[in-house]
Image 1 (cartoon, rainbow, N blue to C red):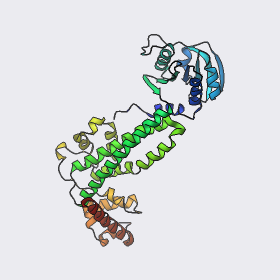
Image 2: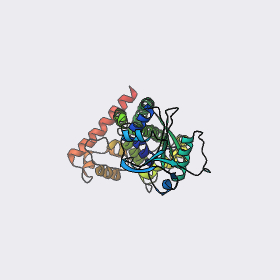
Image 3: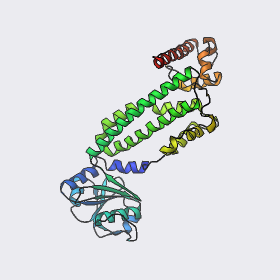
Image 4: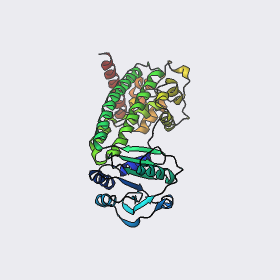
Length: 354
Protein backbone atom coordinates (compact mmCIF):
# COMPACT_ATOMS: atom_id res chain seq x y z
CA UNK A 1 0.00 0.00 0.00
CA UNK A 2 1.29 3.48 -0.87
CA UNK A 3 1.91 5.23 2.43
CA UNK A 4 4.55 7.74 3.44
CA UNK A 5 3.64 7.46 7.08
CA UNK A 6 4.81 5.15 9.82
CA UNK A 7 4.64 5.01 13.57
CA UNK A 8 7.90 6.90 14.10
CA UNK A 9 6.90 9.78 11.85
CA UNK A 10 3.52 9.87 13.57
CA UNK A 11 5.32 10.12 16.92
CA UNK A 12 7.38 13.06 15.66
CA UNK A 13 4.31 14.86 14.34
CA UNK A 14 2.60 14.34 17.69
CA UNK A 15 5.43 16.24 19.37
CA UNK A 16 4.81 19.17 17.00
CA UNK A 17 1.02 19.17 17.32
CA UNK A 18 -0.96 22.16 18.60
CA UNK A 19 -1.05 22.24 22.38
CA UNK A 20 2.49 20.87 22.78
CA UNK A 21 5.35 22.91 24.22
CA UNK A 22 7.33 22.77 20.98
CA UNK A 23 4.44 23.90 18.78
CA UNK A 24 3.46 26.68 21.16
CA UNK A 25 7.08 27.83 21.23
CA UNK A 26 7.21 27.79 17.42
CA UNK A 27 4.00 29.84 17.26
CA UNK A 28 5.63 32.42 19.54
CA UNK A 29 8.66 32.54 17.23
CA UNK A 30 6.42 33.07 14.19
CA UNK A 31 4.38 35.70 16.05
CA UNK A 32 7.59 37.63 16.76
CA UNK A 33 8.50 37.55 13.06
CA UNK A 34 11.60 35.44 13.63
CA UNK A 35 13.03 32.16 12.39
CA UNK A 36 14.40 29.16 14.25
CA UNK A 37 16.29 25.90 13.88
CA UNK A 38 15.36 23.12 16.31
CA UNK A 39 16.85 19.62 16.51
CA UNK A 40 14.87 16.85 18.27
CA UNK A 41 17.30 14.41 19.87
CA UNK A 42 20.90 14.68 21.01
CA UNK A 43 23.17 11.85 19.91
CA UNK A 44 26.75 11.25 18.79
CA UNK A 45 25.97 12.20 15.17
CA UNK A 46 24.47 15.50 16.26
CA UNK A 47 27.37 16.20 18.62
CA UNK A 48 29.89 15.72 15.79
CA UNK A 49 28.25 18.39 13.63
CA UNK A 50 27.74 21.16 16.20
CA UNK A 51 30.05 24.03 16.96
CA UNK A 52 29.87 26.64 19.71
CA UNK A 53 26.78 27.39 21.74
CA UNK A 54 26.33 26.48 25.36
CA UNK A 55 24.89 23.72 27.52
CA UNK A 56 21.57 24.44 29.20
CA UNK A 57 19.88 21.15 30.07
CA UNK A 58 16.70 22.76 31.35
CA UNK A 59 13.02 21.87 30.99
CA UNK A 60 11.58 23.10 27.71
CA UNK A 61 8.82 25.70 27.85
CA UNK A 62 7.28 27.69 25.04
CA UNK A 63 8.73 30.90 26.51
CA UNK A 64 12.27 29.47 26.69
CA UNK A 65 12.10 28.11 23.16
CA UNK A 66 10.91 31.47 21.84
CA UNK A 67 13.51 33.47 23.76
CA UNK A 68 16.47 31.21 22.94
CA UNK A 69 15.42 31.14 19.27
CA UNK A 70 16.16 34.89 19.12
CA UNK A 71 19.83 33.92 18.88
CA UNK A 72 21.02 32.86 15.44
CA UNK A 73 22.09 29.36 16.49
CA UNK A 74 20.09 26.16 16.67
CA UNK A 75 18.31 24.71 19.70
CA UNK A 76 18.87 21.05 20.52
CA UNK A 77 16.14 19.30 22.51
CA UNK A 78 16.01 15.78 23.85
CA UNK A 79 14.11 13.05 21.97
CA UNK A 80 10.86 13.75 23.79
CA UNK A 81 11.16 17.50 23.33
CA UNK A 82 10.86 17.91 27.10
CA UNK A 83 14.30 19.47 27.79
CA UNK A 84 16.49 21.99 26.02
CA UNK A 85 19.95 20.41 25.92
CA UNK A 86 22.01 22.98 23.97
CA UNK A 87 21.32 26.49 22.67
CA UNK A 88 22.81 28.87 20.11
CA UNK A 89 24.84 26.08 18.47
CA UNK A 90 26.11 26.24 14.91
CA UNK A 91 25.19 23.18 12.84
CA UNK A 92 27.99 22.14 10.51
CA UNK A 93 26.76 19.10 8.54
CA UNK A 94 28.82 17.70 5.69
CA UNK A 95 28.60 19.99 2.69
CA UNK A 96 28.69 17.01 0.33
CA UNK A 97 25.19 15.99 1.40
CA UNK A 98 22.72 16.97 -1.31
CA UNK A 99 19.97 19.46 -0.53
CA UNK A 100 17.17 20.94 -2.59
CA UNK A 101 16.84 24.00 -0.35
CA UNK A 102 18.23 27.46 -1.08
CA UNK A 103 18.04 29.29 2.26
CA UNK A 104 20.93 28.86 4.68
CA UNK A 105 18.76 27.73 7.59
CA UNK A 106 16.82 25.22 5.50
CA UNK A 107 19.95 23.84 3.84
CA UNK A 108 21.55 23.24 7.24
CA UNK A 109 18.35 21.63 8.52
CA UNK A 110 18.02 19.22 5.59
CA UNK A 111 21.67 18.19 5.64
CA UNK A 112 21.71 17.72 9.42
CA UNK A 113 18.56 15.60 9.27
CA UNK A 114 20.06 13.38 6.58
CA UNK A 115 23.43 13.04 8.30
CA UNK A 116 22.07 12.25 11.77
CA UNK A 117 18.73 10.72 10.69
CA UNK A 118 17.14 12.95 13.31
CA UNK A 119 14.13 15.30 13.15
CA UNK A 120 15.16 18.87 12.44
CA UNK A 121 12.63 21.72 12.35
CA UNK A 122 13.24 24.88 10.39
CA UNK A 123 11.06 27.95 10.92
CA UNK A 124 11.28 30.39 8.03
CA UNK A 125 11.58 34.01 9.12
CA UNK A 126 10.47 35.46 5.79
CA UNK A 127 7.56 33.05 5.07
CA UNK A 128 6.53 32.02 8.61
CA UNK A 129 6.54 28.43 7.39
CA UNK A 130 7.51 25.45 9.52
CA UNK A 131 9.30 22.57 7.77
CA UNK A 132 10.19 19.22 9.30
CA UNK A 133 13.18 17.29 7.96
CA UNK A 134 13.86 13.74 9.01
CA UNK A 135 16.31 11.54 7.16
CA UNK A 136 15.35 11.79 3.50
CA UNK A 137 11.90 13.14 4.30
CA UNK A 138 10.67 16.68 4.13
CA UNK A 139 7.27 17.80 5.38
CA UNK A 140 5.68 21.21 5.75
CA UNK A 141 3.96 21.50 9.14
CA UNK A 142 0.68 23.13 8.20
CA UNK A 143 -1.29 25.70 10.20
CA UNK A 144 -4.22 24.38 12.23
CA UNK A 145 -6.78 26.02 9.93
CA UNK A 146 -5.37 24.18 6.91
CA UNK A 147 -5.29 20.87 8.77
CA UNK A 148 -8.88 21.25 9.94
CA UNK A 149 -10.04 22.07 6.43
CA UNK A 150 -8.30 19.03 4.98
CA UNK A 151 -9.50 16.77 7.79
CA UNK A 152 -13.12 17.84 7.27
CA UNK A 153 -12.81 17.29 3.54
CA UNK A 154 -11.42 13.82 4.20
CA UNK A 155 -14.27 13.08 6.60
CA UNK A 156 -16.78 14.01 3.89
CA UNK A 157 -15.03 11.64 1.50
CA UNK A 158 -15.00 8.92 4.16
CA UNK A 159 -18.75 9.35 4.72
CA UNK A 160 -19.41 8.75 1.02
CA UNK A 161 -17.14 5.71 0.92
CA UNK A 162 -18.65 4.30 4.11
CA UNK A 163 -22.16 4.68 2.65
CA UNK A 164 -21.02 2.82 -0.45
CA UNK A 165 -19.41 0.11 1.71
CA UNK A 166 -22.66 -0.36 3.63
CA UNK A 167 -24.52 -0.66 0.34
CA UNK A 168 -22.09 -3.28 -0.93
CA UNK A 169 -22.11 -5.34 2.28
CA UNK A 170 -25.92 -5.22 2.44
CA UNK A 171 -26.00 -6.49 -1.12
CA UNK A 172 -23.59 -9.25 -0.11
CA UNK A 173 -25.92 -10.20 2.76
CA UNK A 174 -28.84 -10.42 0.35
CA UNK A 175 -26.91 -12.71 -1.96
CA UNK A 176 -25.80 -14.80 1.00
CA UNK A 177 -29.34 -15.53 2.20
CA UNK A 178 -30.34 -16.23 -1.41
CA UNK A 179 -27.33 -18.55 -1.82
CA UNK A 180 -26.30 -16.54 -4.89
CA UNK A 181 -22.86 -15.15 -3.98
CA UNK A 182 -20.11 -15.10 -6.58
CA UNK A 183 -16.51 -14.29 -5.77
CA UNK A 184 -16.77 -10.91 -7.48
CA UNK A 185 -19.29 -9.80 -4.81
CA UNK A 186 -16.78 -10.69 -2.08
CA UNK A 187 -13.94 -8.93 -3.87
CA UNK A 188 -15.99 -5.74 -4.23
CA UNK A 189 -16.81 -5.74 -0.51
CA UNK A 190 -13.14 -6.18 0.42
CA UNK A 191 -12.04 -3.47 -2.01
CA UNK A 192 -14.53 -1.01 -0.54
CA UNK A 193 -13.58 -1.97 3.00
CA UNK A 194 -9.89 -1.44 2.29
CA UNK A 195 -10.48 1.94 0.65
CA UNK A 196 -12.45 3.09 3.69
CA UNK A 197 -9.60 1.94 5.96
CA UNK A 198 -7.02 3.84 3.92
CA UNK A 199 -8.98 7.09 4.01
CA UNK A 200 -9.45 6.64 7.75
CA UNK A 201 -5.72 6.09 8.19
CA UNK A 202 -4.98 9.38 6.46
CA UNK A 203 -7.45 11.14 8.76
CA UNK A 204 -5.80 9.48 11.76
CA UNK A 205 -2.46 11.05 10.82
CA UNK A 206 -4.18 14.42 10.45
CA UNK A 207 -5.65 13.96 13.94
CA UNK A 208 -2.12 13.35 15.26
CA UNK A 209 -0.96 16.58 13.63
CA UNK A 210 -3.94 18.48 15.01
CA UNK A 211 -3.18 17.45 18.59
CA UNK A 212 -5.70 18.98 21.00
CA UNK A 213 -7.57 20.52 18.05
CA UNK A 214 -8.41 17.11 16.61
CA UNK A 215 -10.72 15.76 19.30
CA UNK A 216 -13.99 16.34 17.43
CA UNK A 217 -12.51 14.92 14.23
CA UNK A 218 -11.51 11.79 16.15
CA UNK A 219 -15.03 11.33 17.53
CA UNK A 220 -16.48 11.51 14.03
CA UNK A 221 -13.85 9.14 12.70
CA UNK A 222 -14.51 6.58 15.43
CA UNK A 223 -18.22 6.66 14.65
CA UNK A 224 -17.70 6.25 10.90
CA UNK A 225 -15.23 3.39 11.37
CA UNK A 226 -17.42 1.45 13.78
CA UNK A 227 -17.32 -2.28 12.85
CA UNK A 228 -15.31 -1.78 9.62
CA UNK A 229 -12.27 -3.73 10.84
CA UNK A 230 -14.44 -6.55 12.20
CA UNK A 231 -16.47 -6.66 8.99
CA UNK A 232 -13.38 -7.09 6.85
CA UNK A 233 -12.04 -9.89 9.04
CA UNK A 234 -15.37 -11.71 9.02
CA UNK A 235 -15.63 -11.50 5.23
CA UNK A 236 -12.18 -13.05 4.93
CA UNK A 237 -13.14 -15.78 7.42
CA UNK A 238 -16.27 -16.54 5.40
CA UNK A 239 -14.58 -16.82 2.02
CA UNK A 240 -10.88 -17.63 2.45
CA UNK A 241 -10.11 -20.28 -0.12
CA UNK A 242 -7.20 -21.91 1.74
CA UNK A 243 -7.71 -22.67 5.43
CA UNK A 244 -3.95 -23.03 5.87
CA UNK A 245 -3.63 -19.26 5.44
CA UNK A 246 -4.23 -16.99 8.42
CA UNK A 247 -6.69 -14.11 8.42
CA UNK A 248 -3.87 -11.72 9.32
CA UNK A 249 -1.77 -12.80 6.34
CA UNK A 250 -4.64 -11.93 3.99
CA UNK A 251 -5.01 -8.54 5.65
CA UNK A 252 -1.27 -7.92 5.33
CA UNK A 253 -1.39 -8.80 1.64
CA UNK A 254 -4.28 -6.42 1.02
CA UNK A 255 -2.47 -3.69 2.99
CA UNK A 256 0.59 -4.19 0.81
CA UNK A 257 -1.23 -3.49 -2.44
CA UNK A 258 -1.04 -0.06 -4.02
CA UNK A 259 -4.41 1.52 -4.74
CA UNK A 260 -4.25 0.44 -8.38
CA UNK A 261 -3.34 -3.11 -7.37
CA UNK A 262 -6.15 -3.21 -4.83
CA UNK A 263 -8.70 -2.18 -7.44
CA UNK A 264 -7.61 -5.06 -9.68
CA UNK A 265 -9.98 -7.92 -8.88
CA UNK A 266 -7.42 -10.60 -9.73
CA UNK A 267 -5.11 -9.40 -6.93
CA UNK A 268 -7.84 -9.57 -4.27
CA UNK A 269 -8.81 -13.03 -5.55
CA UNK A 270 -5.19 -14.11 -5.15
CA UNK A 271 -5.12 -12.77 -1.57
CA UNK A 272 -8.14 -14.98 -0.82
CA UNK A 273 -6.30 -17.94 -2.40
CA UNK A 274 -8.55 -18.26 -5.46
CA UNK A 275 -7.53 -18.64 -9.08
CA UNK A 276 -8.35 -15.58 -11.16
CA UNK A 277 -10.62 -17.74 -13.35
CA UNK A 278 -12.87 -18.28 -10.31
CA UNK A 279 -14.07 -14.66 -10.07
CA UNK A 280 -17.55 -15.20 -11.54
CA UNK A 281 -18.16 -18.63 -10.03
CA UNK A 282 -20.46 -19.21 -7.02
CA UNK A 283 -18.96 -19.31 -3.53
CA UNK A 284 -20.61 -20.22 -0.25
CA UNK A 285 -20.18 -18.20 2.95
CA UNK A 286 -19.23 -20.17 6.04
CA UNK A 287 -21.51 -17.96 8.14
CA UNK A 288 -19.13 -16.08 10.43
CA UNK A 289 -20.34 -12.61 9.41
CA UNK A 290 -24.09 -13.11 9.82
CA UNK A 291 -23.67 -15.22 12.95
CA UNK A 292 -21.64 -12.37 14.47
CA UNK A 293 -24.83 -10.28 14.24
CA UNK A 294 -26.74 -12.68 16.49
CA UNK A 295 -27.02 -11.02 19.94
CA UNK A 296 -24.88 -12.46 22.73
CA UNK A 297 -23.40 -15.25 20.62
CA UNK A 298 -19.76 -15.90 21.65
CA UNK A 299 -17.11 -16.34 18.98
CA UNK A 300 -16.23 -19.86 20.11
CA UNK A 301 -19.87 -20.93 19.62
CA UNK A 302 -19.83 -19.36 16.15
CA UNK A 303 -16.73 -21.39 15.31
CA UNK A 304 -18.40 -24.60 16.49
CA UNK A 305 -21.51 -23.89 14.42
CA UNK A 306 -19.44 -23.25 11.29
CA UNK A 307 -17.36 -26.37 11.90
CA UNK A 308 -20.49 -28.48 12.43
CA UNK A 309 -22.63 -27.26 9.54
CA UNK A 310 -19.99 -26.05 7.09
CA UNK A 311 -21.93 -23.20 5.50
CA UNK A 312 -24.34 -20.38 6.24
CA UNK A 313 -27.06 -22.01 4.16
CA UNK A 314 -26.89 -25.20 6.21
CA UNK A 315 -27.06 -23.21 9.46
CA UNK A 316 -30.12 -21.25 8.28
CA UNK A 317 -31.89 -24.48 7.23
CA UNK A 318 -31.04 -26.33 10.44
CA UNK A 319 -33.69 -27.16 13.02
CA UNK A 320 -33.64 -26.22 16.68
CA UNK A 321 -32.79 -29.81 17.57
CA UNK A 322 -29.85 -29.83 15.18
CA UNK A 323 -28.55 -26.57 16.66
CA UNK A 324 -28.94 -27.88 20.21
CA UNK A 325 -26.74 -30.84 19.28
CA UNK A 326 -23.78 -28.43 18.92
CA UNK A 327 -21.74 -28.20 22.14
CA UNK A 328 -22.56 -25.06 24.08
CA UNK A 329 -25.84 -24.37 22.28
CA UNK A 330 -28.86 -24.89 24.52
CA UNK A 331 -32.47 -24.66 23.41
CA UNK A 332 -32.81 -20.98 24.26
CA UNK A 333 -29.67 -20.06 22.36
CA UNK A 334 -30.67 -22.33 19.46
CA UNK A 335 -34.01 -20.56 19.10
CA UNK A 336 -32.30 -17.18 19.28
CA UNK A 337 -29.85 -18.19 16.54
CA UNK A 338 -32.59 -19.54 14.31
CA UNK A 339 -34.95 -16.61 14.87
CA UNK A 340 -32.20 -14.03 14.42
CA UNK A 341 -30.96 -15.54 11.14
CA UNK A 342 -34.48 -15.93 9.74
CA UNK A 343 -35.41 -12.39 10.76
CA UNK A 344 -32.17 -11.10 9.27
CA UNK A 345 -32.93 -12.92 6.01
CA UNK A 346 -36.46 -11.52 5.85
CA UNK A 347 -35.37 -7.93 6.57
CA UNK A 348 -32.48 -8.14 4.11
CA UNK A 349 -34.70 -9.41 1.31
CA UNK A 350 -37.50 -6.94 2.01
CA UNK A 351 -35.09 -3.98 2.08
CA UNK A 352 -33.36 -5.14 -1.08
CA UNK A 353 -36.50 -5.60 -3.17
CA UNK A 354 -38.53 -2.63 -1.93
